[in-house]
Image (cartoon, rainbow, N blue to C red; front, top):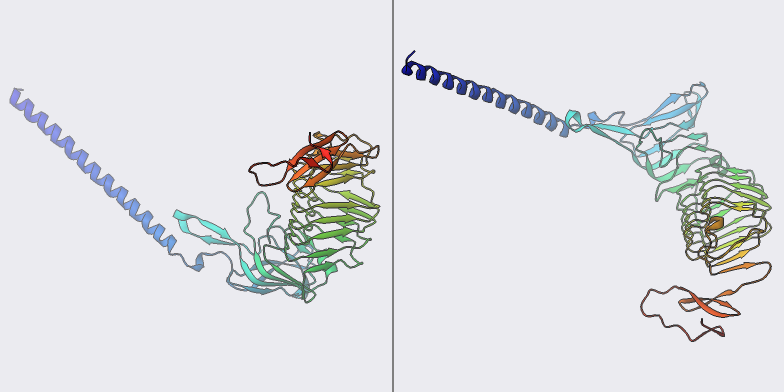
Length: 405
């Protein structure tokens, strides 16, 4: 082969390779564009989806027979319903339960966007007196840890039974959600009076109901369930006259308006965090009540407390019972264990205190002058706390007749 033939053959190979590369690139580009176009069309279809892509029914109330065959659950409410009234019976049997996820629906968004769950908002929901169970995931709270459920809210909740009927319901989720107005026995409930026929208030019974302004209990009540009154923020005072009472975990947690609680009964047992974060609480009054333990976190974050009496019957104060009670500066210790100002022991009850009083005698007192609080003893007055907003401190020359040390 001469040089001319060699160069002609080499040129043919190069031209052929370039042609193959360009043709391959073209097909690749066409394929990618085709896929992209297909996906875009699919996404546009998703985004223009109609209400037919929402799971469940548009209107109506639907029921499921319980495994016992003795009553019905409400299992679904149509997603376009706004005013729902649940009947007492369905097909000759009582309607006794609100089923998990009955207000939840799923919006399909197609392959590109997936979908999402949404809960319903009702202008009113009327429940019959036959209801005995409100399952988890119906209203707020009580959410299943394995599945996040979108729950229902409503402006007006109407219960056709009595207070006695309501207190006996098994609440697996909180029945109220910010601003709900609660009508029971035909009237808007603002002042709750527990009838003598009720000896137990079930867990979550009035949880998050901020329309409640007062609660009146009687001496025969034996139990207030877990979180029964959590975040009932407009209650100012509560008296517990109950002879033998157990108050469940978090029963009054975050009752932000609660200022005073009084125990006039004979015996009380606290659950965990029973009055935690009642930030306005200023006074806890123990009369004849016997209490052996102040439980864990019982008064944590009660920033309004300035003084506290430890009853003589108390044998234990649980972990962090008074942690973050920043203004608890004076403690009256009537118990047998030693409480020392500034100590972290006994649930931090005296951690922020300047004075601890005992039956053996006082080691000082708290005197307030304007924005200044002093510990006053025989040795003089010591500035303990300033409650003003800052700036230059102008200490008075004398405090209650004592020299300032």
